[in-house]
Length: 254
Image (tube, rainbow, N blue to C red; front, side):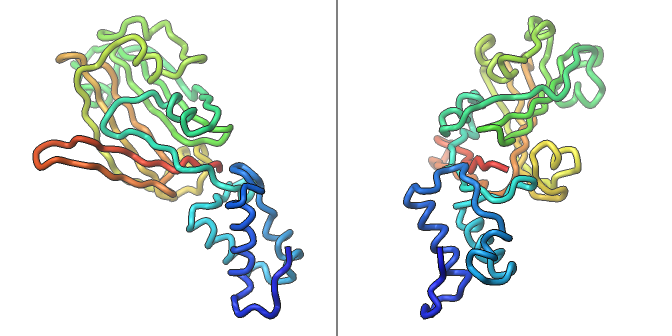
C-alpha cells in the first residue's frame, strides 16, 4: 500500500481510503488485525499523528474498533438486540455471527441484602441467588451481567452452577414470565466494569435494568452493561402503545 503524492487528498484520507477498501472488498474480514500505528507509519512514510487521524476516522465510521491491549481490528457488523422483550443473550450473540461463551465472575446463594430486596421487590429475609456473568462474542467481551434470582419463585436455581448455560438462558428454559419492566441509563465505567469489558475507566456505558414477574411473583432482576461505543436506541410506536422497541448494539471486539 502506497500513498499517491500527486493526489489532492490529504495523506490521512488516502490511508483511510486504502484500509477502507481492504475491509469493504472482504480482503480484511471482521476480526482481522489492522497493522499497528508504527507499522503504518513506516509503510506510508508519514507521521504517527497522520496514521492516528486515519484510524480515528475509520473508528468513527464503525469499520474498525480499537482494543485496549491488542490494537485495532476490523469491526463485526451490527447485531440486533431486542430491548422491550426478554431474549436469550447467548442466542443473540450467535445470531450476530459470533461464537458465544460466558464466564461466571461470582455467585452466591443466601439471604438477600437490603438493597437486593429493593431491587427484586421482596420482603426482608427473602432468599436469592446473586450472580455476575461476563459474556463474550468471538472471545471479545460484549456484555456484563449482574443478576438476582428469587429462590421462592425458582428454588432449583440454588443448585444450578450456570457454568454451561448462562442464567438468562437457564431461566427462559424453565419458567415463563408474564410481565417485565425496563430502565435504561447511561453511566461512565468504573474501574471494575472497565477492566471486565476491556475499555478505559470513565468510558461511556449503556445500562439496561430489567425486572420480570410471573403474575405477582418477582422472578429476577438483571443489570446489563454494554460498552457505550456504537450503541443506538430506536423504536416504532402507535399513538397509544409501543409496538416495537429494539436495542441496536454494534458488538465489537476489544
